[in-house]
Each structure stands twice: as structure tokens, then as C-alpha cells.
Length: 178
Image (cartoon, rainbow, N blue to C red; front, side, top):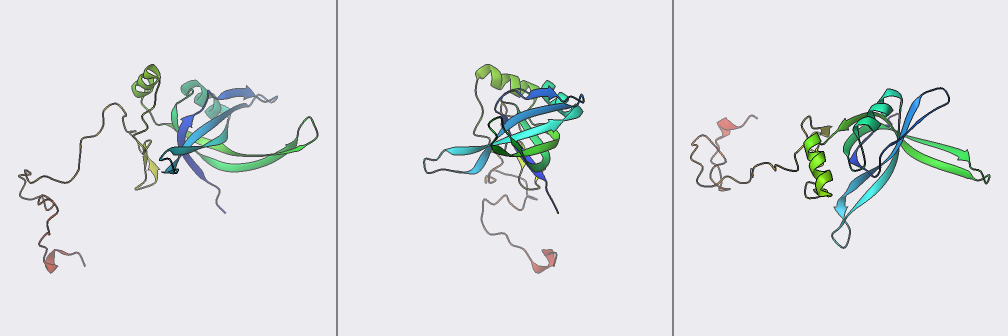
């Protein structure tokens, strides 16, 4: 059976670090994760997912993150229940995070904090959907990548098979790998 979760989102508040009676560190935090689609008004909605992290990872997480930090976490979903002070049974579903990745450079994070906003135009959030893995170098929100759109007819490289601006390409059967 498999119970693995990978999330990328922003912290809704600073992580809360506590210690158990046995001395184990535990951090609680909520991650806002954008949905992949927009609602009727064209706005992107988010899910707010409760997460916990334990021991040294929890201490490191609280030391290196703060409200608004873009992070990736990996873990598992856990359900538990308890009786509250009124004697009612409370059910909790949360992600127990094993690993985390900081997905924003320090300079981009400081710039975002100083301007008081987020770059919502970059929907990839440092996550590559082509291979479903974290990028080792998160995308910068301050220096966008150059436009790698369709090649223009001004492309003078004769060896570029895509330099003819979407016109048909002449390929012989000998060029095909099958």
C-alpha cells in the first residue's frame, strides 16, 4: 500500500514549534496550495492543508521558513481522533512531513517580503510537471526566462529542423527511428 504526499505551497503563518514531554520537537503549520484550475470568476482557489513535522526537521523548518515562504514537502497523510474538553470526538486529517525543500532563493524571498506581494503569474511554483520532481534550481520570480517560443524566420541556423516557423518538415523514412 502507498501513502505518499508531495505538496508545493506557501506557509499561511509562521510554523509553530513545540516540544513533547519527552523532548521531541514538533512543528505545526498550514500550507496554502493553489488548485490547478480557476473558478467561474477566473480566480485561482487554494486548499489549506494542515501539516506536522517532527524532530530535527521541525527545528530546521521553523528556523528557515516564515509566513509566505514557498516550500515543497514530502510525507504521508495521517488521521487521528481525540476527545476535546467538552467530551466531543474530534477527527483530524493532516500531512506528516518527512522532508522539505525551500523553493525560493533568499533574495527572491526578501524581495517578495519587501514588496509585500507574490508573483501569481508563475503558476509552476518551482515544480516541474513534466517529470513530477522538484527542480534543483527554483524558477526566479524576478528574472523571467527568455522567450523560447516558436523560432522566427530570422533563425539562420541551417541545421535547426524547427527553423521554418511551423511549416511542414521534409522527413524521409530513413530518418525515423522505427
